[in-house]
Amino acid sequence: MPGNAGPDGLGFAKTGFRELLASDVAAQDLRIGANFAGDRAAAVSRALAEARRTIATMPANYITFPNSDARVFTAAPATPARPGRELTLDGEVLRAFGTLTVPGHVWRTLQRLGVWVEPVLVGEWSRLMRAYGERMGRPVGSGEAEAALAWLDPIRDTQLARIVAQRLLDQGRQVTCVWTGAWIGSGPGTLDIDHCLPWSAWPCGDLWNLLPATPRVNQHLKRDRLPSAAALAGARTSIMAWWSDAWLSDPALQGRFEREAAAALPVPASASFEDIFAGLEWRRLRLRQDQQVQEWQGVRGDL
Image 1: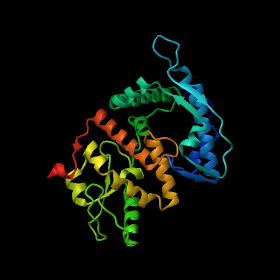
Image 2: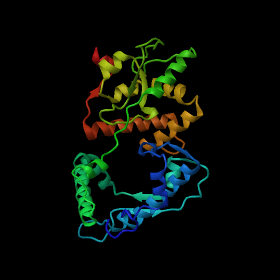
Image 3: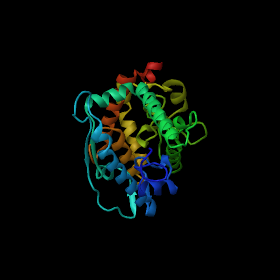
Image 4: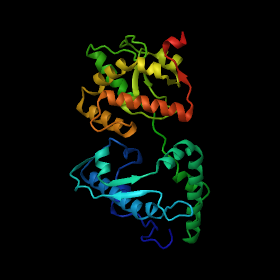
């Protein structure tokens, strides 16, 4: 912005932000469950503190309801303890930087109308950046601002779940299709990894959402449909057994599983498998209500 501090006009960019730009921290690395060490941990912590300060003093302070001085958002910044040589982005760490309260009706509206809200925001920011560029004598080319604002699509990756399933099979352990109970062999073409909540409706590659299935069920029966309440309830025991066998056996994967579940599902602190499954049922219902995703009634419904 013209007049802001620094040669590039990025008034919000302080030490932590510039350290992130200069380091090897990619945007995809800044996700729930990510772990940083050494100088990278310090840079991420400083950047989070700067972002917290900017949010509290600028948008949360100045955004008000129409024809009112009442603020839309309530910011409660906090100062976390000095970070050590390691930093893991989980709920506890992020909450230590403070909280931002969003009114329920605003949150629900953004969820349901996001497909229209997002392009409006991108268009407005692009227009603003082009105007700033003209005032600073640094024209922003056509499409340049839009490209900088493009959302990074999640990568559809089921490799880790495949590796874990194959490791269990190599140990002589039994791996079954969560939807049918059929045994899965160790030969090629016998194992698929299914996204319980379909990727096409909710692109989530969290460990709790990756389930073993036979290729027939995953590719030809369930496909991109949402399991019905009955189908999900019928697979409850199989899903929880897979979670236990696949993720509890490895402390590193167990921690990631729990952090991802806490970030994506409405579960309490120190959630049990029962809590996580209840959160999965709640998320399934929200997808059904908000997006009207076609339901899959289970294997019997395809007979």
